[in-house]
Length: 598
Image (tube, rainbow, N blue to C red):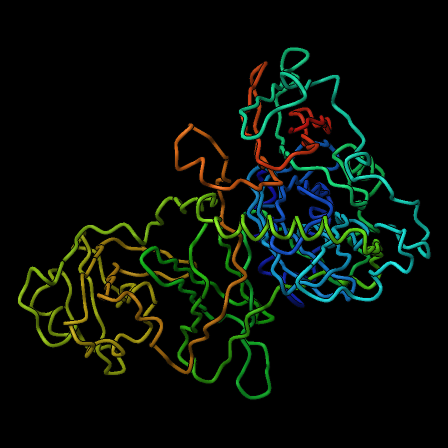
């Protein structure tokens, strides 16, 4: 069945489509196959229920197979959005999922007003189940740098932070930490050596499986200060697991006008080719996409009978802009429209309400000062973005490289190819235009007038004459490959990749048939900072006002016992250690422990 899913995606991409990521299935057998794809659910472990402007929201994603209750390997992309009471998104994140797991973060800027917000999590496949199928969690934001909106100001002086009495919700007068229902205690124990620690003291969390293999699974761990503010109820893995066991896709796929396609192989980028006059869909058109730069990406797709094309980005990339172009003869007569991401409709969302009393002014002031100091020293405790280390695609493997500094430079690329580069020459095609040719290794094979892939700083060059007269003094190097390549449905003889000195050819290259589009890029993977003290003099002078002592978003446990070290900060008070996740058997784990810093 797992092998069948990618084949389904290939089949559906050839069917008619109505909008971003949606398709109308005309084939009954194909529709039945799609109905057999497992349903998914999302759980998001967030580090806090109340955050201030200037603080970081951290979150970790678990994508679940609702039938097996284990992590799902179905969708390769998840989506997280923070939505305000005005139904506008503060941010939209796309997250790459590896075996159902992903994580990201968001720094809350001073432009976000005080208010109640919802953290929403879903996959494209989950959209077929409707809004009630998404993960929803409350997050309250306090912004002391803006005027507090009137609805969030308490009328009575003796009130502190209270829920809105007009809402049919139980009073939330206790800190958020009391709201999480614990589970998994029969699988894993979470303990520390003592419950009280000094400032900047090293502490250890010991996680121990209570029977052989019980600890194995995927988890996330947060240590954060408990404050006196009333927090919205936060969902744990146990509560979300129970909720999903009761929920299913709302109705049969057969009852839907269009089905949202699951992203089974990677991130889908889609669009449509229409005629320039009248906007009529254009089938059987070849569309190329280039993600320019040193680690460039190239792909070619065909439009289906409705003019829709799809690119499957199954590897991480660093680029923020894609260059799309038509390869057909009538490229100037057509238009490329790139689909934008469609968020769920949020009109039915209900938001938590809270009020802030004047008595909270000292707490808010102190925390704001601490945040400003921490942000001033952010470079000392910065997270590290994990460099993209994807396997280089076949079109970036070259047999020969020419550094032009090693040769006498000629005026143009055309002259350089003729005088310096072996196995490359220029001829006129059937229309009298100059084109490059790359000699194959197997000389007895017929060329069949196949052209090479020609790239300038990773930008696919459809008309070779566009760069024939480009000054060679701006070129750093020329790479060639003499193999034959199949990219999408197009065949090429060889690759000619030219790298400029500045590496920014795509910034100034313009043609009427090109379409530059900003990409909704997945969030980068990160290694989150873990504070360590070694007793140096420089460390003693560095302030430490961390409210978040540790964030460990992807904790994979396999052994019987695991120890995790962390250091306390200069902020006294109570802190909660909270662990969320699922065992390898699919059992939810939600553990917590309170410690104190004096």
